[in-house]
Image 1 (tube, rainbow over the protein chains, first blue to last red):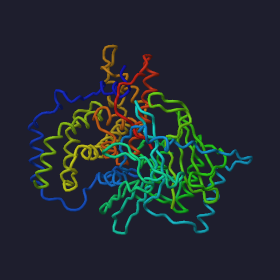
Image 2: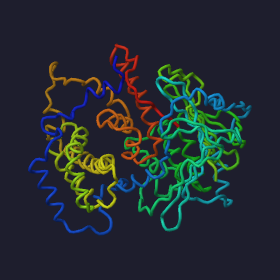
Image 3: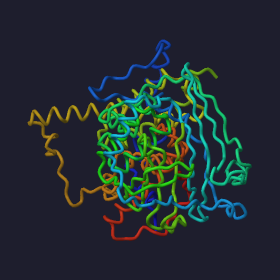
Length: 332
Length: 182
C-alpha cells in the first residue's frame, strides 16, 4: 500500500514527462530569454523586488539563502546497535503541578516589569542546546544532542559552531552521524565550525524582531511563511525559528510573553527544572499526537526552552507515546 | 567556465524543472507560467555570482519568491473583480465541473488543500520536486533540522487528511527515506 508521499507523487499535476513542460531541449521562447539575459549589462547592487503593498514584503532570495547558513549539518541516522545504550532518549521533563499556577498574563506582566527595569538587550545569533530524535522506518530511533552557537559580527558576517555534547551526561561519549555512518564521539567533539560571508537579508527571521506583540506576530508569520495566519502549533514553531536566530532582549521577551498570553490553547502546567538545571514555568499545548511544552523564566518571562513529545505511538518509526521528539534549551 | 557560462548551463539543465515547479503552484493558470519563469531566471541571472554548485534548490527558492509576488498580484486582481462583481471568473461561473470532470488524484489534492500553505509546500517539494531534506532546507530558507521536522509533521497531517477522505488504510509504508527530527 502506498504511503502519503507516494499518493502525492502519483497526483503530480505536472509530471516530468509532461507534454509541454517535460525535460528536453529548450524551445524557441526559452532560448530567446537566455539570449536576452546574456545581452543584459552586468547588474549592480541588489535586485529590486516589486512592492507588494502595506504590511507585505517580498522576501528577497538572498534572505532565504542567508537563513540556510544557520542550518545544522545533521545527516540521517540509523540506530547503531553498539552505540545506543549510552544514549537512551531523555525522558520528558517532570512538571510539578502548582497550587496557584502562574498565568501567561501574569508572566507577561513580570516580563514588562523586567523590561522597564532595563533587563537584557537583543543580540543577533543564538546559543542553543538541543536533543533531536532521529527516526528510521527500520531501526530504533536515537537521540542526537548538540550545542550550537551562532555569532554575528558588525560587518554582517557570522560564524557558527556546532558541538556534539549532552550536558545531562557530561563527559560521556555522544552519538553523531557523518559520511561513515553513526558513531560515538568524545563529548565536545566539533561537528562543524563555519564562517559565513556578509549577508544583506532584511526580512524575517534575519530582520530584528519587533518589540510589540502585534508586530511580532506579523514578523513570526512572515518568518514562518504562513500567509494565512498562525495556529498555536505553527506559532510555537515560529517562536523556535525566532530563538534559533536571535537572543532576545527584555523588551522582545516581553512582547513575546504578551503574544503567548493571547494564544489559544496554551495553558499553565506547573513548575519544571529544565535540562540545563534552570527553574522554569511550563505551559502546554497539545495537537495531533504531539504535546508542546514551553518553558519560561518565572522572573523575566523569557522563553528558556521547548519540548515536543509524542502523545501517541508511531509504530512506523518505532516511536512510543511519551518519547521526546525534540528539545531545545536557549541560553544567552 | 565563467559565471555566465555556468549560469547558461544551469539554465539549460533546469529550465523545465523550474517551469514545472511554477506550473504546479499556479493551479492551471498556464498563461502566467512563462511570465513567472522568465522572472525567476532574470532574478537568478542578476544573482548569478551566488549560484551554488547544486543550483536547482536555489532556483526553486528564487521561484518561490517570484511566485509569492505573482500570487499576491493574482489575489489583488481577484479582489478587484470581486468588487466589480461582473466577472464570471470571480464567481466561478466559468467552471462547469461534472462527475467525470474530476482529474486523477483530485482527492489527494483535496487532502493537500486542507493543510496549511507551509505544510503543502514542504510536501510538494518532497513529492513533486523529489527533493531531499537538505535541498528542502535550501528552498525554504531554514535549517536542515527544521526542514526535516516540518516534513515529518506535514506528512502526519496529510496522512490524517487522507485517512479521513479515503477509507482505505495507508499503513504499511513503502517509503524508504529516513526522517531526521529535531
